Image (cartoon, rainbow over all chains, first blue to last red; front, side, top):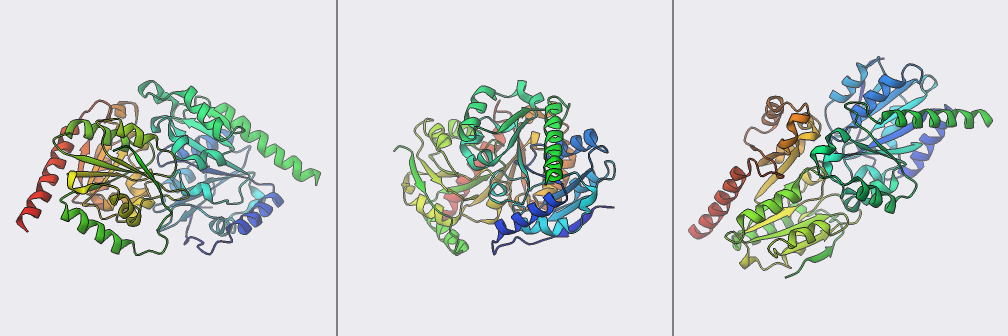
Length: 227
Length: 227
């Protein structure tokens, strides 16, 4: 399978929650763990996805939905890695993925052959947090150079995240990022969020992220089996 | 004057262009140069504004409109510098400033006492690019750690910008940012954009930015006088 490109307008009529529920049921039925990956532009979503593919494939069978306003450069980059199935969703004039787009993208995937679906949202720390896609987990990245004050200014994303990856920790020595203050403000908004400190550049800290994914993929399979 | 906080819902009914035109006329009448400062979260908007205040005040009389989804930490930080008048506009559930918000904010400023109005938009490389505020110039920052591929993925912002500040160049040695490729892709979208390479942290490259502001403030005064 090559990269498939879909161009979809935003679902302005709403009904997002209902469609998200339908996506979730469909993913559950096929035991596909779906992770919605969100962050500011350039915080490292694509790098995280590429590292994760490199580490977990082929044991974990991965597919990617790639959300962008324009271009397919990330989709092509990702597909070049081990031929992972990638659906490129382009959203001209949009600023986030919604459940309708995911529904359309799912139609182009063979769910029986996937364990893990990584959904790369549009680079935007605001709007994507408001739209459920039917994912099992919301994962956000913040890159160290963005600064430790971001939870105060973009609280919804930090509140919604199940996992927060503090990325580009290799740049920490060159910034005045205060990790203690940052973790304090994040957990003040969201006491149950899991925080991993990582560098997608040199791989530091990523083993904990991979273990978390493994556990979640397994949990979903086990739940499905018990039904 | 202390920091004034306004909480405003987005102007969903449109009429944005008309209101932007009205703001522009009002700013022209009072010879206030208005600059709309846009970027991803954490690219350095607040730092740029604070550096600019430090360098240009009191000769250039500056006021700031500070757009945020939540919090007033940037407004307070900025106001502490030389007591600059700051209007904090909070937009719960929003993702960009619009012309209506600026109109309301202008009502709280004494325009006769201002030469330069710096408008810090919400940290978002997508939505703010779509809304004219009535500003004279659109200025965007991209921070080097965000990566050189951003023009392909967020083309509208790069197309709309009059000035692009490539910020955090002090971090360039620790990234794989390709300046030549970046400038090529930016000018491919927008041949007339002015590009300044700066570090708001150590001040590198900012003198050209200050000179540009000086020239624009002067140009507006001269135009007004000639009328």
